[in-house]
Length: 506
Image (cartoon, rainbow, N blue to C red; front, side, top):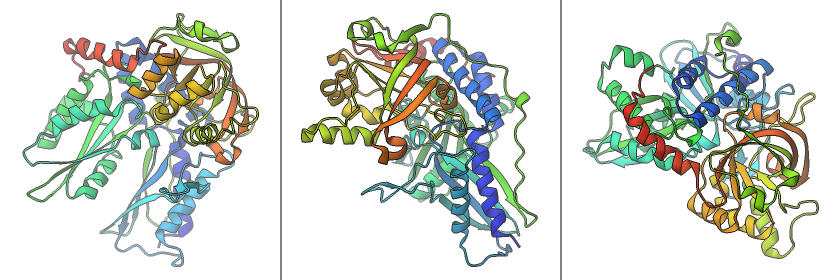
């Protein structure tokens, strides 16, 4: 007999737990990658992620501002009985999600929208979860809870290969097209076989398994899937994409693969990346009460603390103009201080509609000689100015870039990952710049924000336009005023350098 309240409480506790505790295998693996990394930019990004992770564990605040869409894998024992037969199992799971995301001491960002092809209205409590249920022998309820960020989920890929095609070739060709919006270094989950939807579920569920590629490197492969994992791991890292796409030795920390029998005419292959905010936990309910999740020990975290480099240039944003930004170089580290505005997808759409209609920007919104930060922060708690506030994927704003630079007086943008051809062309034309903050370091970044207020589009919630006052916010010049992008130059450089380095060693 399993009580509904035990399920609800366990799911709620699990979602709070994974919001601020990385799986310890991820931390150890990333620390190993940090220690062997030779790219200065990639090493700095990893240090920010590791520092952020420890800060979140100690402060019990979200690792990433994108607290994810909840994905739950259930294995229900055939002999389980339910105390409450009025609510469905899905109802219980969703009540756990609701409690977790509205927890007053650590409110998590609600990102789930109803009517996805229409009005896209936020449900305000991050429900419903995506739930996969399997009936199995036994009398226990096995639950895996994950929170999947949009930046990595949006890079999911699927293909129907011919049976004679090479899976490795497909992966090696596709990963560079994914850019850095999935916040590497992370994990690739690959599903092979079944039908189209089965392959996708296999890929997603594979990401729930522990990181063990280094053990596999030590022992050697014992199956064809082991051989495939090792080959893909080596070839993806040899691409030189590196942490945050800046170029470096480690792009993936592991490659996970699950397969299933398939039709003789088919070879379905799905690939889903997990980002630097890898979040999942597994537990089993037997009727003896809610799950007891043991937190990692602080001493399990590596002794790595990020601090700005001596070469970083401090920038007072109140003194910045187009002439000043023309001297900034690709890859240069800046520490920004002053006032910036924020805006994401929905805010950009509203701005475009207002400009197109001739109404102009809302009162109080002036982008002249200013920077916009692509962010949707977590709500603050206690004495916080703002909750975790890391960058969102910049490419989603590419189609608005020319309009923003031409019509608003904007100097530049701050986001994560690369910019596309359209955005880079607009940046070059208007002699603007694009600066990159580290995805996966949201709590660390938020400590640079000293004041915050909503100045427009309050109805959009976390997508409203805020004004932040910042002090020493760390960023990298990702696209300079001439259109040179470090996300193009960095991986090319390291792909060449990496040829003489054994990237699969511990």
